Length: 109
Length: 118
Image (tube, rainbow over all chains, first blue to last red):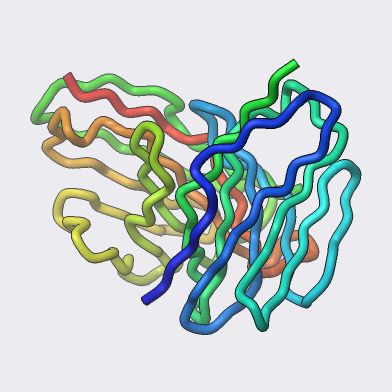
């Protein structure tokens, strides 16, 4: 079956770095997406990886290893506004997104 | 980036009535639109996939006669919740996928519609 695993909740300190891991199993693979979702709002796109390696975009970076079925989202210089749920989603061969349950990130001062 | 709108943003209706939610891609043509439902503190759940001009494909467990989807054009899809019940109260989100931006497979999300059935 198709499955996405990511931690339920993480806590980090303002100004620090946090890494959110995601493992996936899908029927075919057309890329790995990370979305940020604040409570009561729709998800917003953060990153897309389809090739192995690290993609850096400002304070956020995303890594993919296709052979391991593994990705992580790295957030640097954490700010209080980064408190949100982070959703990992893998796109299968039918271009459907298979969603993880999301990781709730709590930032403490 | 590409913009997707949803209307209404919030709706309260009485049990037994029907509610229509519109999803529009404002600056690109959406070949495929997706409808999701999200209950509090849960992940997005795909309800159905619709392609312009054809019948929607519903996920297992989603009643197609209750959740009517019409994808009439490349910029508009509608979801009608018929004979709504309190358990249908949820956050409904649409997304559109088309040839916009640098990632052809990316889904652009609408802001969501919060439905409350009393």
